[in-house]
Length: 150
Image (cartoon, rainbow, N blue to C red; front, top):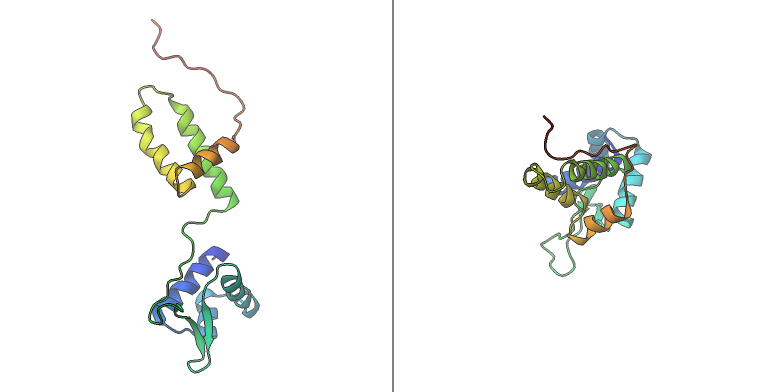
């Protein structure tokens, strides 16, 4: 299990059980004591997760929102990609986009491009900017003219 999966697992366990002991988290994640401490610290400091230790229940829980004591409004960010996954997404986007510029396959490839753009960013401007700034260079590209010879 990588670090990102551990973050989501920690939050899911605390949300589902209400209060989870350190030992239960450590057993569920199969990590060392130091790793779990680092993960909890990272969630609190960098992800602003309101994870607090409850001495009475001897476990970790999500602190309620200060505006509404009954609700916890915190949620981890959506999808995270590793460097290799982003590279794969950008490569896929460029390959699909270059397959058929306005030709026969264009309308069939558009849903795939839309899905890739959605995965690259939340707003329409984000993936466009990302694609504009990063170009995956292919070794060569042979021009392919529409039509066929006799």
